[in-house]
Length: 152
Image (tube, rainbow, N blue to C red):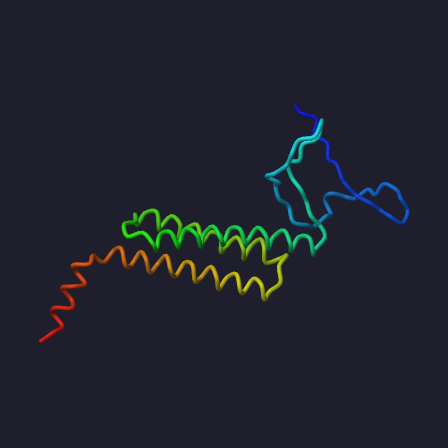
């Protein structure tokens, strides 16, 4: 069994003493850093950010990256003519999962106005995917046949 130690980086500028905090009482945003470089004997597996302004900056950056990724995918799908409907359904499910994640996890840390804006953006993305699914499911010949029936 590995000896699991918990380290706390803290700075108290007024007294220049070590600050001991109770880990069970800390309420902050937990995440696993991906770009962690290993120092000699120290590896970062999990971080807890407590300062609200820093949590907000981290979450906004994370959300922006994810929304840009979805937007690039949707633009690439809309530009291409032949797409697989199963791939679109998978992305639609992923967008809906991300929407629930924002509501359940990020809403605690972000401003209500910003969360509402994010949810509107996600709804717009899911609407575009749904429209593309509808367009793919209706063949072009079927649309031409409908137009011919309407004329007298």
